[in-house]
Length: 112
Image 1 (cartoon, rainbow, N blue to C red):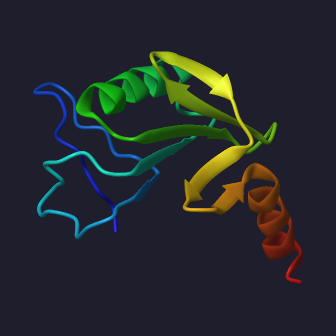
Image 2 (cartoon, one colour; image 1 turned 30 degrees about the horizontal axis):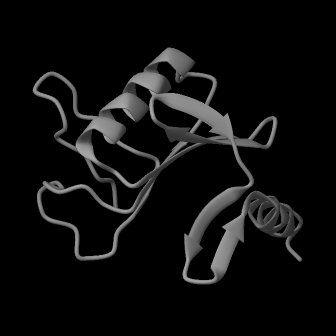
């Protein structure tokens, strides 16, 4: 399902991935949620991705990640800045890491 966010009167970003801890409001979320992921693509300028991250942060989204599948680098957007990270998410004592993400991507691409 594609989710459009109404964060700004002039701009409605469409995140690549979101994670929520409650049902999504329809027709679009009106409250911040747990996680948003932007996946870089050749037709999506980095400046546009940064603008989206700033809007997500201003809106109160708890965790903002930017993933570059070509270089396999993951950044966390916090306090207005991108910082490279290996941690995708944490819930209690469980963690999801970038290494696990790339291992799954490799597994899926080889069909194993």
